[in-house]
Image 1 (cartoon, rainbow, N blue to C red):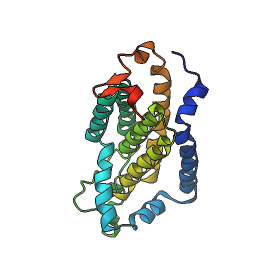
Image 2: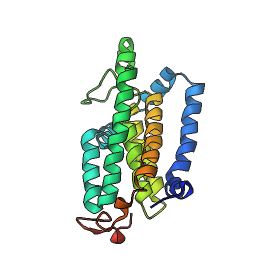
Image 3: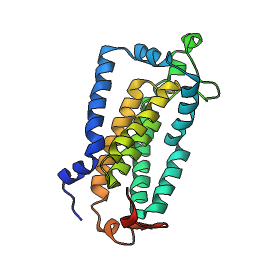
Length: 224
């Protein structure tokens, strides 16, 4: 089945267009303020509730969280689960390759001489290297785009964007990444996943009735 680019963009428009505005805003921030200024502006805003909230929410962007989400979606619908799982894998390989080529320092190492002035959430394991891009942000925006693409209700895209933004923000809140890391991660997730979905979902085998169902019933009964 051949899908026109305009049709594909329409399916992800509820997430893509607001994201483009957000991306432009983040780029503007990075042009006006330094990496250090943005980091400390975020680091100085902490609450006990937010510490617990972001410490747990960020797990949805790691390998285990992505695996669980992909399995759940696959059980509901084989095609949607396949699209999500393969998108995760493709974006993960690309992001990890970039990480190990760039080898950028994370905040904990970058500010090694200023740690006394940095707020660190207790109990969170802080890494030092491979900061760029943020892998959690890549995964979050990959999932958000796929779930928006396969959803039947257009408002789902706005919800998914908020979900992805919160996970990306959690990486800065927990002092694991800088704004440039999560911004690049989000863009990478959006671009790579868009290209992959547009290509792979055109293949006839994914449109067969055998793929358009799940363990818990057919996709026709699903609202998203």
